[in-house]
Length: 277
Length: 287
Image 1 (cartoon, chains in turn purple, cyan):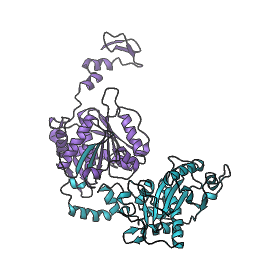
Image 2 (tube, helix red, strand yellow):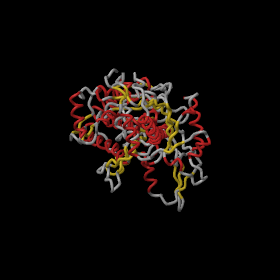
Image 3 (cartoon, one colour):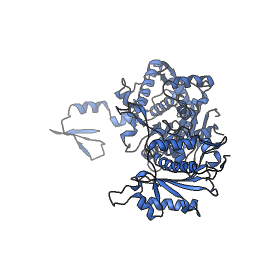
Image 4 (spheres, chains in turn yellow, blue):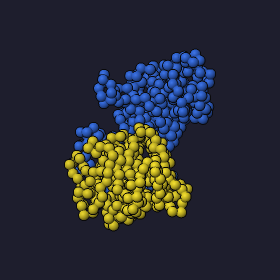
Protein backbone atom coordinates (compact mmCIF):
# COMPACT_ATOMS: atom_id res chain seq x y z
CA UNK A 1 0.00 0.00 0.00
CA UNK A 2 1.41 3.40 -0.88
CA UNK A 3 0.18 6.70 0.50
CA UNK A 4 0.15 10.25 -0.74
CA UNK A 5 -1.54 13.33 0.57
CA UNK A 6 -2.50 16.86 -0.27
CA UNK A 7 -3.88 19.56 1.99
CA UNK A 8 -7.40 18.13 2.33
CA UNK A 9 -7.41 14.47 1.34
CA UNK A 10 -5.41 11.42 1.91
CA UNK A 11 -4.99 9.23 -1.10
CA UNK A 12 -3.59 5.79 -1.22
CA UNK A 13 -3.06 3.17 -3.81
CA UNK A 14 -4.48 -0.22 -2.88
CA UNK A 15 -1.83 -1.89 -4.98
CA UNK A 16 1.37 -0.24 -6.11
CA UNK A 17 0.72 -1.28 -9.70
CA UNK A 18 -2.86 -0.02 -9.65
CA UNK A 19 -3.85 3.42 -10.89
CA UNK A 20 -7.11 3.34 -8.95
CA UNK A 21 -7.29 5.94 -6.18
CA UNK A 22 -9.68 5.95 -3.27
CA UNK A 23 -10.46 9.36 -1.86
CA UNK A 24 -11.20 9.79 1.82
CA UNK A 25 -13.47 12.70 2.62
CA UNK A 26 -11.56 13.78 5.70
CA UNK A 27 -8.05 14.20 6.94
CA UNK A 28 -6.40 10.95 8.03
CA UNK A 29 -2.87 12.09 7.61
CA UNK A 30 -1.74 11.15 11.12
CA UNK A 31 -3.68 7.96 11.75
CA UNK A 32 -3.38 6.04 8.53
CA UNK A 33 0.39 6.24 8.27
CA UNK A 34 0.61 4.88 11.82
CA UNK A 35 -1.68 1.96 11.04
CA UNK A 36 0.05 1.47 7.73
CA UNK A 37 3.36 1.37 9.48
CA UNK A 38 2.24 -1.65 11.51
CA UNK A 39 1.46 -3.50 8.32
CA UNK A 40 -2.11 -4.18 9.50
CA UNK A 41 -4.54 -4.98 6.74
CA UNK A 42 -8.05 -5.94 7.73
CA UNK A 43 -8.77 -7.95 4.59
CA UNK A 44 -5.55 -9.92 4.79
CA UNK A 45 -5.98 -10.53 8.50
CA UNK A 46 -9.44 -12.10 8.15
CA UNK A 47 -8.36 -14.08 5.14
CA UNK A 48 -5.34 -15.44 6.90
CA UNK A 49 -7.11 -16.35 10.16
CA UNK A 50 -8.09 -19.98 10.67
CA UNK A 51 -11.86 -20.05 11.04
CA UNK A 52 -11.72 -23.25 13.10
CA UNK A 53 -12.39 -22.46 16.74
CA UNK A 54 -12.26 -25.93 18.22
CA UNK A 55 -9.32 -27.95 19.56
CA UNK A 56 -8.01 -30.78 17.38
CA UNK A 57 -10.10 -33.37 19.18
CA UNK A 58 -13.27 -31.75 17.84
CA UNK A 59 -12.06 -30.16 14.64
CA UNK A 60 -12.66 -32.80 11.95
CA UNK A 61 -15.93 -32.62 10.11
CA UNK A 62 -16.75 -36.24 10.89
CA UNK A 63 -19.55 -37.94 12.82
CA UNK A 64 -17.02 -39.24 15.36
CA UNK A 65 -15.83 -35.73 16.12
CA UNK A 66 -19.42 -34.48 16.25
CA UNK A 67 -20.38 -37.18 18.75
CA UNK A 68 -17.32 -36.38 20.89
CA UNK A 69 -18.24 -32.70 20.80
CA UNK A 70 -21.79 -33.40 21.94
CA UNK A 71 -20.93 -35.82 24.70
CA UNK A 72 -17.84 -34.05 26.02
CA UNK A 73 -18.64 -30.37 25.47
CA UNK A 74 -22.37 -29.75 25.02
CA UNK A 75 -24.35 -29.22 28.22
CA UNK A 76 -28.12 -29.38 28.36
CA UNK A 77 -30.32 -27.77 30.96
CA UNK A 78 -33.30 -29.75 32.23
CA UNK A 79 -35.18 -27.02 34.05
CA UNK A 80 -37.88 -29.33 35.38
CA UNK A 81 -35.32 -31.63 36.99
CA UNK A 82 -32.92 -28.73 37.78
CA UNK A 83 -30.14 -30.69 36.13
CA UNK A 84 -27.32 -29.55 33.89
CA UNK A 85 -25.61 -32.41 32.13
CA UNK A 86 -23.77 -33.31 28.97
CA UNK A 87 -25.61 -34.82 26.04
CA UNK A 88 -25.63 -38.50 27.02
CA UNK A 89 -23.27 -40.81 25.11
CA UNK A 90 -26.07 -43.08 23.94
CA UNK A 91 -26.27 -45.04 20.76
CA UNK A 92 -29.23 -43.08 19.37
CA UNK A 93 -27.31 -39.81 19.84
CA UNK A 94 -24.39 -41.35 17.99
CA UNK A 95 -26.73 -42.49 15.21
CA UNK A 96 -28.28 -39.03 15.07
CA UNK A 97 -24.85 -37.37 14.85
CA UNK A 98 -23.90 -39.79 12.09
CA UNK A 99 -27.01 -38.99 10.06
CA UNK A 100 -26.80 -35.26 10.73
CA UNK A 101 -23.16 -34.88 9.67
CA UNK A 102 -23.64 -37.13 6.65
CA UNK A 103 -26.62 -35.17 5.43
CA UNK A 104 -24.91 -31.83 6.07
CA UNK A 105 -21.80 -32.87 4.14
CA UNK A 106 -23.89 -34.17 1.25
CA UNK A 107 -26.23 -31.16 1.54
CA UNK A 108 -29.05 -33.68 1.56
CA UNK A 109 -32.21 -32.20 3.13
CA UNK A 110 -33.05 -33.95 6.38
CA UNK A 111 -36.27 -34.39 8.30
CA UNK A 112 -36.18 -35.65 11.86
CA UNK A 113 -39.47 -36.98 13.22
CA UNK A 114 -39.06 -37.68 16.89
CA UNK A 115 -40.64 -38.35 20.25
CA UNK A 116 -40.35 -35.57 22.80
CA UNK A 117 -37.81 -35.71 25.66
CA UNK A 118 -35.00 -37.15 23.55
CA UNK A 119 -32.64 -34.10 23.77
CA UNK A 120 -32.61 -34.08 19.98
CA UNK A 121 -33.16 -30.33 19.75
CA UNK A 122 -30.35 -29.71 22.23
CA UNK A 123 -28.11 -32.03 20.24
CA UNK A 124 -29.05 -30.28 16.99
CA UNK A 125 -28.09 -26.90 18.54
CA UNK A 126 -24.79 -28.46 19.51
CA UNK A 127 -24.12 -29.72 16.01
CA UNK A 128 -25.06 -26.41 14.41
CA UNK A 129 -22.69 -24.57 16.76
CA UNK A 130 -19.98 -27.14 16.12
CA UNK A 131 -20.25 -26.65 12.34
CA UNK A 132 -20.29 -22.87 12.74
CA UNK A 133 -17.10 -23.16 14.79
CA UNK A 134 -15.37 -25.16 12.09
CA UNK A 135 -15.96 -22.61 9.35
CA UNK A 136 -17.38 -19.17 8.82
CA UNK A 137 -21.07 -19.85 8.51
CA UNK A 138 -24.48 -18.28 8.72
CA UNK A 139 -27.13 -20.43 10.38
CA UNK A 140 -30.82 -19.66 10.78
CA UNK A 141 -33.08 -21.38 13.30
CA UNK A 142 -36.82 -21.05 12.76
CA UNK A 143 -39.65 -21.95 15.14
CA UNK A 144 -43.34 -21.19 15.55
CA UNK A 145 -43.03 -18.10 17.73
CA UNK A 146 -40.39 -15.53 18.60
CA UNK A 147 -40.13 -16.90 22.14
CA UNK A 148 -39.58 -20.45 20.91
CA UNK A 149 -37.07 -19.43 18.24
CA UNK A 150 -35.17 -17.23 20.70
CA UNK A 151 -34.98 -20.04 23.22
CA UNK A 152 -32.99 -22.11 20.75
CA UNK A 153 -30.39 -19.34 20.59
CA UNK A 154 -30.45 -19.07 24.35
CA UNK A 155 -29.64 -22.77 24.55
CA UNK A 156 -26.58 -22.18 22.38
CA UNK A 157 -25.53 -19.27 24.59
CA UNK A 158 -26.10 -21.40 27.69
CA UNK A 159 -24.18 -24.42 26.43
CA UNK A 160 -21.23 -22.34 25.22
CA UNK A 161 -21.06 -20.45 28.52
CA UNK A 162 -21.09 -23.75 30.41
CA UNK A 163 -18.32 -25.00 28.16
CA UNK A 164 -16.05 -21.99 28.85
CA UNK A 165 -16.61 -22.40 32.59
CA UNK A 166 -16.28 -26.16 32.80
CA UNK A 167 -13.48 -26.66 30.30
CA UNK A 168 -11.13 -23.68 30.76
CA UNK A 169 -8.24 -25.80 29.46
CA UNK A 170 -9.76 -25.55 25.97
CA UNK A 171 -8.95 -21.81 26.00
CA UNK A 172 -11.91 -20.98 23.82
CA UNK A 173 -12.57 -17.39 22.79
CA UNK A 174 -15.97 -16.33 24.10
CA UNK A 175 -18.87 -15.75 21.77
CA UNK A 176 -20.97 -12.62 21.65
CA UNK A 177 -24.71 -12.19 21.39
CA UNK A 178 -27.39 -9.67 20.51
CA UNK A 179 -30.69 -9.46 22.34
CA UNK A 180 -31.40 -10.31 25.95
CA UNK A 181 -30.17 -13.62 27.30
CA UNK A 182 -31.68 -12.83 30.71
CA UNK A 183 -35.16 -13.03 29.23
CA UNK A 184 -34.07 -15.90 26.97
CA UNK A 185 -34.59 -13.74 23.91
CA UNK A 186 -31.27 -13.49 22.09
CA UNK A 187 -31.57 -12.65 18.43
CA UNK A 188 -28.01 -13.48 17.33
CA UNK A 189 -25.13 -15.59 18.54
CA UNK A 190 -21.84 -14.38 17.09
CA UNK A 191 -18.86 -16.70 17.16
CA UNK A 192 -15.32 -15.31 17.18
CA UNK A 193 -14.64 -16.69 13.70
CA UNK A 194 -17.37 -14.48 12.22
CA UNK A 195 -20.09 -17.14 12.15
CA UNK A 196 -23.58 -15.89 12.87
CA UNK A 197 -26.43 -17.96 14.26
CA UNK A 198 -29.73 -16.15 14.14
CA UNK A 199 -33.43 -16.87 14.52
CA UNK A 200 -36.76 -16.27 12.85
CA UNK A 201 -40.31 -17.32 13.56
CA UNK A 202 -43.15 -18.26 11.27
CA UNK A 203 -44.94 -14.93 11.72
CA UNK A 204 -41.88 -12.94 10.69
CA UNK A 205 -42.47 -13.40 6.98
CA UNK A 206 -40.24 -15.08 4.46
CA UNK A 207 -36.50 -15.00 4.87
CA UNK A 208 -35.16 -13.32 1.79
CA UNK A 209 -31.70 -13.42 0.35
CA UNK A 210 -29.26 -16.23 -0.14
CA UNK A 211 -26.04 -17.69 1.12
CA UNK A 212 -27.21 -19.35 4.32
CA UNK A 213 -25.01 -22.27 5.38
CA UNK A 214 -27.86 -23.96 7.13
CA UNK A 215 -31.48 -23.52 8.12
CA UNK A 216 -33.13 -25.55 10.84
CA UNK A 217 -36.92 -25.56 10.90
CA UNK A 218 -37.88 -26.55 14.43
CA UNK A 219 -41.44 -27.83 15.00
CA UNK A 220 -42.08 -27.52 11.28
CA UNK A 221 -45.02 -29.92 11.41
CA UNK A 222 -46.94 -27.35 13.45
CA UNK A 223 -46.40 -24.36 11.16
CA UNK A 224 -49.43 -22.97 9.40
CA UNK A 225 -47.80 -23.62 6.02
CA UNK A 226 -44.95 -26.11 6.48
CA UNK A 227 -44.26 -26.55 2.77
CA UNK A 228 -43.99 -22.78 2.19
CA UNK A 229 -41.23 -22.58 4.81
CA UNK A 230 -39.53 -25.74 3.59
CA UNK A 231 -39.47 -24.47 0.01
CA UNK A 232 -38.28 -20.99 1.00
CA UNK A 233 -35.52 -22.53 3.12
CA UNK A 234 -34.45 -24.67 0.18
CA UNK A 235 -34.36 -21.56 -1.99
CA UNK A 236 -32.24 -19.41 0.28
CA UNK A 237 -29.70 -22.19 0.82
CA UNK A 238 -29.33 -22.86 -2.87
CA UNK A 239 -25.72 -22.40 -3.97
CA UNK A 240 -24.43 -20.85 -7.16
CA UNK A 241 -24.14 -23.20 -10.14
CA UNK A 242 -21.77 -26.07 -9.48
CA UNK A 243 -21.35 -25.27 -5.78
CA UNK A 244 -22.98 -27.10 -2.88
CA UNK A 245 -24.76 -24.18 -1.21
CA UNK A 246 -26.43 -24.58 2.17
CA UNK A 247 -28.50 -27.19 3.91
CA UNK A 248 -32.02 -27.54 5.33
CA UNK A 249 -33.04 -29.63 8.31
CA UNK A 250 -36.57 -30.00 9.71
CA UNK A 251 -37.13 -31.27 13.25
CA UNK A 252 -40.65 -32.12 14.37
CA UNK A 253 -43.07 -34.37 16.16
CA UNK A 254 -45.58 -36.41 14.24
CA UNK A 255 -48.60 -34.48 13.02
CA UNK A 256 -51.48 -35.32 10.69
CA UNK A 257 -51.16 -32.03 8.77
CA UNK A 258 -51.21 -33.06 5.09
CA UNK A 259 -48.92 -30.20 4.04
CA UNK A 260 -46.27 -31.40 6.47
CA UNK A 261 -46.71 -35.00 5.45
CA UNK A 262 -46.31 -34.06 1.79
CA UNK A 263 -42.79 -32.72 2.53
CA UNK A 264 -41.77 -36.16 3.70
CA UNK A 265 -43.43 -37.90 0.78
CA UNK A 266 -46.36 -39.08 2.97
CA UNK A 267 -43.94 -41.47 4.66
CA UNK A 268 -44.71 -42.38 8.24
CA UNK A 269 -42.15 -42.43 11.03
CA UNK A 270 -43.97 -45.29 12.73
CA UNK A 271 -43.89 -47.33 9.55
CA UNK A 272 -40.20 -46.60 9.09
CA UNK A 273 -39.55 -47.77 12.64
CA UNK A 274 -41.63 -50.90 12.13
CA UNK A 275 -44.12 -49.86 14.81
CA UNK A 276 -47.08 -50.25 12.44
CA UNK A 277 -47.13 -53.80 11.22
CA UNK B 1 -25.60 -48.69 12.78
CA UNK B 2 -28.57 -50.65 14.14
CA UNK B 3 -30.32 -48.86 16.98
CA UNK B 4 -33.79 -50.05 18.04
CA UNK B 5 -36.22 -47.12 17.92
CA UNK B 6 -34.04 -45.26 15.43
CA UNK B 7 -34.43 -45.54 11.65
CA UNK B 8 -33.51 -43.54 8.57
CA UNK B 9 -34.28 -43.74 4.90
CA UNK B 10 -33.93 -41.59 1.83
CA UNK B 11 -37.38 -40.89 0.46
CA UNK B 12 -38.43 -40.37 -3.15
CA UNK B 13 -37.84 -36.62 -3.18
CA UNK B 14 -34.24 -37.14 -2.04
CA UNK B 15 -34.81 -36.03 1.54
CA UNK B 16 -33.35 -38.08 4.39
CA UNK B 17 -36.15 -39.07 6.74
CA UNK B 18 -34.99 -39.92 10.27
CA UNK B 19 -37.44 -41.29 12.84
CA UNK B 20 -36.55 -41.45 16.53
CA UNK B 21 -38.90 -43.15 18.98
CA UNK B 22 -38.37 -42.85 22.73
CA UNK B 23 -37.62 -46.58 22.87
CA UNK B 24 -34.27 -45.71 21.24
CA UNK B 25 -33.24 -44.65 24.72
CA UNK B 26 -32.85 -47.85 26.72
CA UNK B 27 -33.68 -45.97 29.94
CA UNK B 28 -37.16 -45.14 28.69
CA UNK B 29 -38.94 -48.39 29.49
CA UNK B 30 -42.54 -49.11 30.60
CA UNK B 31 -41.87 -47.70 34.06
CA UNK B 32 -40.66 -44.39 32.61
CA UNK B 33 -43.69 -44.31 30.30
CA UNK B 34 -46.08 -44.75 33.24
CA UNK B 35 -44.37 -42.02 35.26
CA UNK B 36 -44.21 -39.61 32.34
CA UNK B 37 -47.82 -40.19 31.37
CA UNK B 38 -49.08 -39.42 34.84
CA UNK B 39 -46.78 -36.43 35.22
CA UNK B 40 -47.69 -34.96 31.84
CA UNK B 41 -51.38 -35.57 32.39
CA UNK B 42 -51.26 -32.99 35.18
CA UNK B 43 -49.98 -30.49 32.60
CA UNK B 44 -52.88 -31.15 30.24
CA UNK B 45 -50.87 -33.51 28.02
CA UNK B 46 -53.46 -36.23 27.54
CA UNK B 47 -53.45 -39.66 25.94
CA UNK B 48 -54.11 -38.23 22.47
CA UNK B 49 -51.12 -35.90 22.83
CA UNK B 50 -49.01 -38.80 24.04
CA UNK B 51 -49.99 -40.93 21.05
CA UNK B 52 -49.11 -38.15 18.61
CA UNK B 53 -46.01 -36.60 20.16
CA UNK B 54 -44.43 -39.63 21.82
CA UNK B 55 -45.69 -42.59 19.78
CA UNK B 56 -45.39 -40.71 16.43
CA UNK B 57 -49.02 -41.38 15.51
CA UNK B 58 -49.97 -39.24 12.52
CA UNK B 59 -53.71 -39.82 12.65
CA UNK B 60 -54.34 -37.90 15.85
CA UNK B 61 -55.06 -34.21 15.64
CA UNK B 62 -54.36 -31.57 18.19
CA UNK B 63 -57.42 -30.38 20.12
CA UNK B 64 -60.67 -32.03 21.16
CA UNK B 65 -62.52 -33.81 18.33
CA UNK B 66 -66.19 -32.95 17.91
CA UNK B 67 -67.25 -36.56 17.44
CA UNK B 68 -65.43 -38.60 20.05
CA UNK B 69 -67.57 -41.64 19.21
CA UNK B 70 -65.78 -42.12 15.92
CA UNK B 71 -63.55 -45.19 15.99
CA UNK B 72 -61.41 -45.36 12.91
CA UNK B 73 -60.91 -49.12 12.76
CA UNK B 74 -64.63 -49.63 13.26
CA UNK B 75 -66.09 -46.98 10.97
CA UNK B 76 -63.39 -47.13 8.33
CA UNK B 77 -61.95 -50.64 8.62
CA UNK B 78 -58.75 -51.52 6.82
CA UNK B 79 -60.40 -52.92 3.65
CA UNK B 80 -62.05 -49.53 3.15
CA UNK B 81 -58.90 -47.44 3.64
CA UNK B 82 -58.06 -47.45 -0.03
CA UNK B 83 -61.22 -48.84 -1.54
CA UNK B 84 -64.61 -47.51 -2.55
CA UNK B 85 -67.79 -48.75 -0.93
CA UNK B 86 -69.64 -50.89 -3.49
CA UNK B 87 -73.08 -49.95 -4.76
CA UNK B 88 -75.57 -52.21 -3.00
CA UNK B 89 -78.83 -53.13 -4.64
CA UNK B 90 -82.08 -51.60 -3.38
CA UNK B 91 -80.29 -48.90 -1.41
CA UNK B 92 -81.40 -45.32 -1.15
CA UNK B 93 -79.06 -42.44 -1.86
CA UNK B 94 -78.81 -39.10 -0.15
CA UNK B 95 -76.67 -36.18 -1.23
CA UNK B 96 -75.75 -33.80 1.58
CA UNK B 97 -74.76 -30.28 0.52
CA UNK B 98 -73.16 -27.41 2.37
CA UNK B 99 -73.39 -24.77 -0.28
CA UNK B 100 -75.50 -21.81 0.82
CA UNK B 101 -73.70 -18.46 1.10
CA UNK B 102 -70.24 -19.96 0.82
CA UNK B 103 -67.43 -20.25 -1.68
CA UNK B 104 -66.28 -23.42 0.06
CA UNK B 105 -69.10 -25.78 -0.84
CA UNK B 106 -69.00 -29.48 0.00
CA UNK B 107 -71.00 -32.53 -0.99
CA UNK B 108 -71.26 -36.00 0.56
CA UNK B 109 -72.98 -38.98 -1.05
CA UNK B 110 -74.55 -41.42 1.37
CA UNK B 111 -75.88 -44.89 0.63
CA UNK B 112 -78.61 -46.16 2.96
CA UNK B 113 -78.90 -49.91 2.61
CA UNK B 114 -82.04 -51.94 3.13
CA UNK B 115 -80.36 -53.29 6.23
CA UNK B 116 -80.28 -49.77 7.62
CA UNK B 117 -76.56 -49.18 7.32
CA UNK B 118 -75.23 -45.78 6.29
CA UNK B 119 -72.32 -45.60 3.90
CA UNK B 120 -70.44 -42.37 3.27
CA UNK B 121 -69.32 -43.25 -0.24
CA UNK B 122 -67.99 -40.07 -1.71
CA UNK B 123 -67.16 -36.48 -0.91
CA UNK B 124 -66.81 -33.69 -3.42
CA UNK B 125 -64.79 -30.61 -2.53
CA UNK B 126 -63.54 -27.92 -4.88
CA UNK B 127 -59.75 -27.51 -5.07
CA UNK B 128 -60.11 -23.75 -4.53
CA UNK B 129 -62.96 -21.39 -3.56
CA UNK B 130 -65.74 -22.06 -6.02
CA UNK B 131 -69.20 -20.70 -6.76
CA UNK B 132 -72.24 -22.94 -7.12
CA UNK B 133 -72.18 -22.39 -10.90
CA UNK B 134 -68.96 -24.43 -11.07
CA UNK B 135 -69.54 -26.71 -8.09
CA UNK B 136 -72.86 -28.19 -9.22
CA UNK B 137 -71.43 -29.56 -12.50
CA UNK B 138 -68.50 -30.95 -10.53
CA UNK B 139 -70.91 -32.90 -8.29
CA UNK B 140 -72.89 -34.00 -11.34
CA UNK B 141 -69.82 -35.49 -12.92
CA UNK B 142 -68.76 -37.27 -9.73
CA UNK B 143 -72.23 -38.76 -9.26
CA UNK B 144 -72.34 -40.07 -12.80
CA UNK B 145 -69.04 -41.84 -12.22
CA UNK B 146 -70.06 -43.48 -8.94
CA UNK B 147 -73.72 -44.17 -9.72
CA UNK B 148 -73.81 -44.37 -13.52
CA UNK B 149 -77.37 -45.70 -13.62
CA UNK B 150 -78.72 -44.36 -10.35
CA UNK B 151 -77.44 -40.81 -10.13
CA UNK B 152 -80.87 -39.37 -10.81
CA UNK B 153 -82.36 -41.28 -7.84
CA UNK B 154 -80.31 -39.35 -5.30
CA UNK B 155 -82.30 -37.28 -2.83
CA UNK B 156 -80.54 -33.99 -2.13
CA UNK B 157 -80.61 -32.09 1.15
CA UNK B 158 -78.73 -28.92 1.93
CA UNK B 159 -78.20 -26.32 4.63
CA UNK B 160 -81.05 -23.91 5.29
CA UNK B 161 -79.24 -20.96 3.71
CA UNK B 162 -79.43 -22.62 0.32
CA UNK B 163 -82.60 -20.63 -0.37
CA UNK B 164 -81.01 -17.28 0.48
CA UNK B 165 -80.65 -15.09 -2.54
CA UNK B 166 -77.26 -13.74 -3.40
CA UNK B 167 -76.94 -9.97 -3.31
CA UNK B 168 -75.07 -9.84 -6.57
CA UNK B 169 -77.40 -11.60 -9.00
CA UNK B 170 -80.49 -12.30 -6.90
CA UNK B 171 -80.25 -16.06 -7.40
CA UNK B 172 -80.00 -18.62 -4.64
CA UNK B 173 -77.71 -21.66 -4.53
CA UNK B 174 -80.88 -23.75 -4.72
CA UNK B 175 -81.87 -22.08 -8.00
CA UNK B 176 -78.37 -22.47 -9.36
CA UNK B 177 -78.37 -26.19 -8.47
CA UNK B 178 -81.75 -26.60 -10.15
CA UNK B 179 -80.21 -25.41 -13.41
CA UNK B 180 -77.96 -28.47 -13.21
CA UNK B 181 -80.72 -30.92 -12.36
CA UNK B 182 -80.47 -30.95 -8.55
CA UNK B 183 -83.48 -30.37 -6.36
CA UNK B 184 -82.01 -29.24 -3.06
CA UNK B 185 -84.31 -29.48 -0.05
CA UNK B 186 -83.28 -27.25 2.89
CA UNK B 187 -82.58 -29.16 6.10
CA UNK B 188 -82.56 -27.97 9.68
CA UNK B 189 -79.54 -25.91 10.64
CA UNK B 190 -80.07 -26.53 14.35
CA UNK B 191 -76.70 -27.65 15.69
CA UNK B 192 -78.05 -29.91 18.42
CA UNK B 193 -80.12 -31.94 15.96
CA UNK B 194 -77.20 -32.37 13.61
CA UNK B 195 -74.84 -33.26 16.45
CA UNK B 196 -77.30 -35.75 17.84
CA UNK B 197 -77.88 -37.40 14.44
CA UNK B 198 -74.17 -37.89 13.75
CA UNK B 199 -73.49 -39.12 17.27
CA UNK B 200 -76.30 -41.63 16.81
CA UNK B 201 -74.82 -42.84 13.52
CA UNK B 202 -71.44 -43.33 15.16
CA UNK B 203 -72.54 -44.86 18.42
CA UNK B 204 -75.37 -47.06 17.16
CA UNK B 205 -74.80 -50.66 16.07
CA UNK B 206 -76.84 -52.81 13.74
CA UNK B 207 -75.67 -55.83 15.65
CA UNK B 208 -72.74 -56.59 17.91
CA UNK B 209 -70.16 -56.54 15.11
CA UNK B 210 -71.75 -54.17 12.63
CA UNK B 211 -71.55 -50.41 12.97
CA UNK B 212 -74.40 -48.22 11.78
CA UNK B 213 -71.99 -46.08 9.76
CA UNK B 214 -69.17 -46.99 7.43
CA UNK B 215 -67.12 -44.61 5.36
CA UNK B 216 -64.74 -45.07 2.50
CA UNK B 217 -61.23 -43.84 3.23
CA UNK B 218 -60.65 -43.51 -0.47
CA UNK B 219 -63.84 -41.64 -1.31
CA UNK B 220 -64.05 -39.52 1.86
CA UNK B 221 -60.48 -38.51 2.68
CA UNK B 222 -61.30 -35.15 4.26
CA UNK B 223 -64.40 -36.43 6.04
CA UNK B 224 -62.33 -39.20 7.64
CA UNK B 225 -59.58 -36.79 8.67
CA UNK B 226 -62.28 -34.62 10.24
CA UNK B 227 -63.60 -37.55 12.25
CA UNK B 228 -60.06 -38.41 13.30
CA UNK B 229 -59.80 -35.05 15.01
CA UNK B 230 -59.30 -32.33 12.42
CA UNK B 231 -62.94 -31.34 12.95
CA UNK B 232 -62.66 -30.08 16.50
CA UNK B 233 -64.22 -27.84 19.06
CA UNK B 234 -63.34 -24.22 18.80
CA UNK B 235 -60.93 -22.96 21.41
CA UNK B 236 -61.60 -19.52 22.76
CA UNK B 237 -58.48 -17.99 24.22
CA UNK B 238 -59.56 -14.37 24.40
CA UNK B 239 -63.28 -14.16 24.99
CA UNK B 240 -64.19 -12.65 28.34
CA UNK B 241 -67.60 -14.29 28.19
CA UNK B 242 -66.20 -17.79 27.88
CA UNK B 243 -62.92 -17.40 29.67
CA UNK B 244 -59.41 -17.65 28.28
CA UNK B 245 -58.38 -21.06 27.01
CA UNK B 246 -61.79 -22.62 27.61
CA UNK B 247 -63.31 -25.00 25.09
CA UNK B 248 -66.54 -23.65 23.69
CA UNK B 249 -69.09 -26.02 22.29
CA UNK B 250 -69.13 -25.00 18.68
CA UNK B 251 -67.03 -26.66 15.99
CA UNK B 252 -64.09 -24.76 14.61
CA UNK B 253 -64.65 -23.53 11.07
CA UNK B 254 -61.73 -24.85 9.11
CA UNK B 255 -60.94 -26.82 5.98
CA UNK B 256 -62.62 -29.89 7.46
CA UNK B 257 -65.86 -28.34 8.68
CA UNK B 258 -67.69 -27.86 5.37
CA UNK B 259 -67.67 -31.51 4.44
CA UNK B 260 -68.73 -32.37 7.98
CA UNK B 261 -71.67 -30.00 7.63
CA UNK B 262 -72.65 -31.66 4.36
CA UNK B 263 -72.39 -35.06 6.03
CA UNK B 264 -74.56 -33.88 8.92
CA UNK B 265 -77.41 -32.89 6.58
CA UNK B 266 -77.21 -36.28 4.89
CA UNK B 267 -77.30 -38.12 8.24
CA UNK B 268 -80.26 -36.03 9.43
CA UNK B 269 -82.23 -37.17 6.41
CA UNK B 270 -81.00 -40.77 6.67
CA UNK B 271 -82.13 -40.96 10.27
CA UNK B 272 -85.58 -39.66 9.30
CA UNK B 273 -85.81 -42.38 6.66
CA UNK B 274 -84.66 -45.14 8.98
CA UNK B 275 -87.02 -44.11 11.75
CA UNK B 276 -90.00 -43.98 9.44
CA UNK B 277 -89.42 -47.14 7.37
CA UNK B 278 -88.87 -50.63 8.78
CA UNK B 279 -85.55 -51.97 7.55
CA UNK B 280 -84.19 -55.49 7.18
CA UNK B 281 -82.09 -56.66 10.06
CA UNK B 282 -78.39 -56.79 9.26
CA UNK B 283 -76.42 -54.69 6.86
CA UNK B 284 -73.04 -54.64 5.23
CA UNK B 285 -70.80 -56.33 7.73
CA UNK B 286 -67.31 -55.05 8.20
CA UNK B 287 -64.42 -57.40 7.52
